[in-house]
Image (tube, rainbow, N blue to C red; front, side):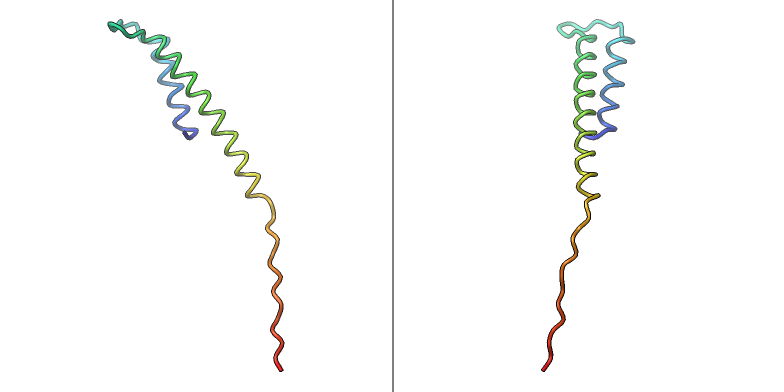
Length: 73
């Protein structure tokens, strides 16, 4: 899950939790909204942590290979 998807889930969950007043038989819309927000926040935290880990790996300098010249006789 990427950052954009996480923000989208948080936004949809907020709309369902606080803006929708419709009632659906067998489904609590507000609870579904809270669940989507929680999943979005967890996804956002995981995405940011993974992005930080990968950024650290990219910053490490790569040791150049030692190439020795051939000896010609």
